[in-house]
Length: 57
Image (cartoon, rainbow, N blue to C red; front, side, top):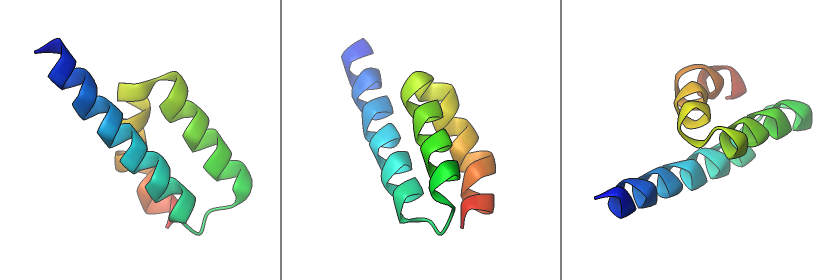
């Protein structure tokens, strides 16, 4: 079960990073969001989809 949960988090983190890279945000904002997702995988991903995606697009 833990392996499946870890895999789901990894896939969603990769999706969040790819979505961030495709956004129209400045390079600095992209870098900060990517670092947040890499340092805090679950919390960073949630924050990106709730807060960053609206402002990054």
